[in-house]
Image (cartoon, rainbow, N blue to C red):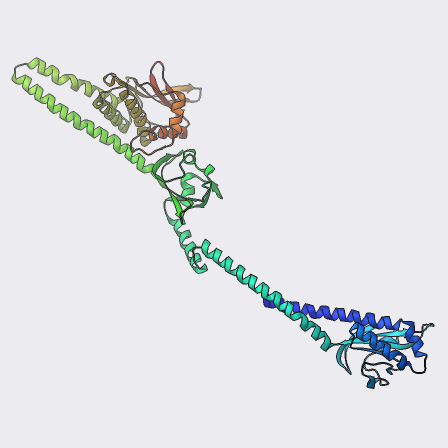
Length: 508
């Protein structure tokens, strides 16, 4: 660029010199031609003697290489070289003899030159002589050569500045790219882009401010239902917006239809924070399976405890028989059995979902182990769990009962704790065309209950770092209820209770 600039500058300087020289030779020739002194000198017997000293003086003052005053027939009256006086002028004069002033580049006796030729008029307007003034190309080149050092000096200064700028720019680019070459950056981008679109975990990378995501992969948009385009913290679910911007490990968040496991790390470089990386894994199906597994495990543990208790009772009955206390042995053996079998028979006959019946039986035994009396009311009855699936029913009922058992256990007198569970379909609206029913789950307990404010806060937490149901369970229930258009409310008087209703179209 600098070399091109030097060439253009030289060409421009040459053009400017030509234009300026053309203007100067024209001005000098016209000034002499319009002077009355020339016409008067031409009327003398020896015009050369009068004009030669004057034109040479003007030539020296104006820097012209030659000034020639000639007759209309080309005969020179003056010339820089006196020996040329009287000879014919070489060059074009026809336009001047026609009354026009013009300039041209012509090779004359002094070599190539830029010259102007103009006519001299007398008082009557007749052309009585011609005046030519010119500057040789050699002199113009000499003047141009005097400007070249300044041009090269400016070019050298520009080259130094450009070199410094290139060095600083290269240094800045290397610092920003961590010393990677363009090819290395291209390969890294292609590999990273392929990885981002192929991994099955959601990934968000936030800048230093933490407000805007600089990288969002496809899986993150799917899991969080994010819109296309730029993503900010405000586009994330509410619970994730309230997250710490620091290090986060295995934090569970609940959205409308998913359970997500969040990890977050702070990225630093040379001791300064450059952003945060958030990874998201979908634990929805895993949580559902774990919920069912917990129910089965609880039921199995209850069965194992009952087996152990039954063995103790059997030993007692055998001993009473050996002691001859037959009536007391029969009464002792059948009392608890009748009560348990009665509950099992009632649940299996009135609850159409085997998983829900097993869950309720398991929770009865689980509560009993913790010293809590759990009662399934007599009006608990439903043919199916519709509109909920078996998985959703276990999640809903199991979490509400767990919270009630915990609340009842937290009282000062835990031995007096109780929980009462009702699960049923209730007709709510009847028209001439159809009847609408709702699935109602009501769980009351002897605990202190929760205020509406505390209940709302617990429901909106949406996350839990604990392995059990605390925090996460109530949020799961709320999301499930919202998804099916149901309602959930808490009561404190006359007793602590949580009531969930899920509407469904029963029949037409």
